[in-house]
Length: 210
Image (cartoon, rainbow, N blue to C red; front, side, top):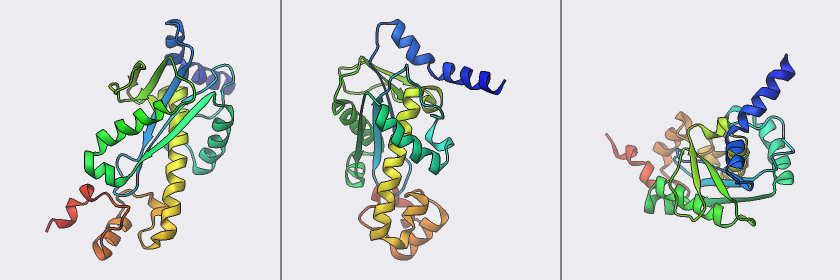
């Protein structure tokens, strides 16, 4: 029964990919972002074309997977991917053009930098993008689509590693623990010592409130 349940879950996660194949689209990319909400650090996007005849067990929304499992899947996804690109847009650009536009820019760059041009791209939530490749937005796509789930893992592991690196430069904020999100510890550090170069100043207006 457990095996049958897992097999059904895999079939369900390939539903959108199978729909695209029925349209004649066979190079199907999944794309997802990580880091729209944090107070610090970049937004990160991964776009990946996965083989659909060699499924990796355990791929899901990156937030639902343990850090250890994510890191393991990250390596397997990169090894098996037909093509992938991972892009980041930094906090200065986010402040300049806002987080939604920065996310779209990051997505556009990720699609552009794939070594193979996909027939279409499945994206978590966002359905309009300035690209000549068809985009299909899927609500909760990182949970529902195998390809988007793979992209979410690539993006999250990449961004988490980056935040752990800048934590070495600014240990007082605890970036390695909260990855820039607005936890109590992070906000207390901000109130005590103020922001650093990696903070999104447009996200910190609450610090001026009395």
